[in-house]
Image (cartoon, rainbow over the protein chains, first blue to last red):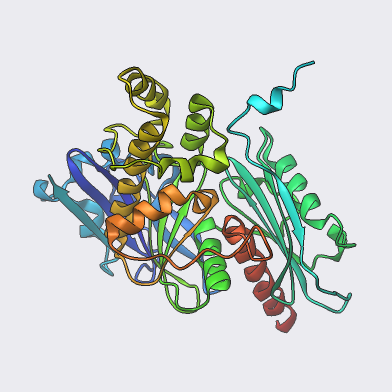
Amino acid sequence: MITHYGYIDGSGEYYIVVDSDKCSGCRKCVIACPEKALELVTEFIDLEDKTVAAIAEEHRKKIRYTCTGCKPETQQTPCISACPSSAISIVWNPR
Amino acid sequence: MADLTKEEFWRWREYHRVMPKKWSKADIITAGVDVGSVGSKAAIMVNGEAYAWGITRTGSNSPESAKKALDYALQDTGLTVGDLKYIVGTGYGRVNVPMANKAITEIACHAKGANYIWGPRVRTVLDVGGQDIKAIKIDETGRVVSFLMNDKCAAGTGRGMEVFADLLQIPIEDIGDISLKVEKEPDPVSCTCVAFAKTEAMGLLRKGWSKEKVLAAYTRAMAVRMANLINRVGYEPELVVTGGQSKNIGIVSRIEVILGVKTLPMPRWREDGLDPMVAGALGAALLGKALYEKAQKA
């Protein structure tokens, strides 16, 4: 399951995208994130509970503030670099 | 005393329904309780077939709202909570469903519920709830492939429509039809924020806009937002709308125009069909059945 966390507004669209089918729940992204925006959650997939990375509940509705320092042009996206299974990506289409 | 209820235009109708069906103690009877931000829905399934449901308004207390919705669904069925083999809680208040065996996110439940109501050809589900909008892409089994939720605020959701119903003094059930009574579609309002909606609408009304035109402009803006979400998650035919706003023809028809597609026809919920507002609760009850069977095998 691919989950998009982010927003569309006048500045463009910005999403942190987590693919829970690829995620192994290794916690590396959680540790790497300078804003502590990620956490491990229990996701219900195919009748099983799986531990996967997700944007923490309290940050889900404020990605525009929390993740603003890590837009792709900064070349610093610690969560993506930390992930060994390429489960995290970013969509950033400035308007 | 004056009848105040007549003036509460936002107040949508709570109701419950029992399908003409028999059950026995040997059946696998499961329930899904979907506590939303505005409405609480509960559905009862017998062997994975919809049997009864109830829709109530969510109060300030989630556990109580959950209980109220479930009791409402059980009404006239002869069933008691004790007869239910498995109960799944879902929705915004899912962790506060005291009688639930398990809590599952509303995303998984709406996906499953849409698959149940419309069948395996559904690929895109737009759930427009009381406080948020979710675009969900699913496969033919009702499994979630990809999902996106609007990030903040209640802009363009059911609660916003309640505010408008009250302001324009139009019963909430008629809002969709009335928003379509414009000769020419006006430009969408720039701000769909619920907190500012009243201010903006008042401004337009004072400029001489008709109620219909104001509603059309607001509904249009909501539909644009929803179409954006669908495009991001990747539109795939067929599309359905679930949640309370699925009943708003003004929203649904505008999404169709913007995306240039046709949604699958809504079930005839007023007569004898399934209500797309209970999609989440139905999905929860179905997942409950699967979990119960899995536990029996283990």
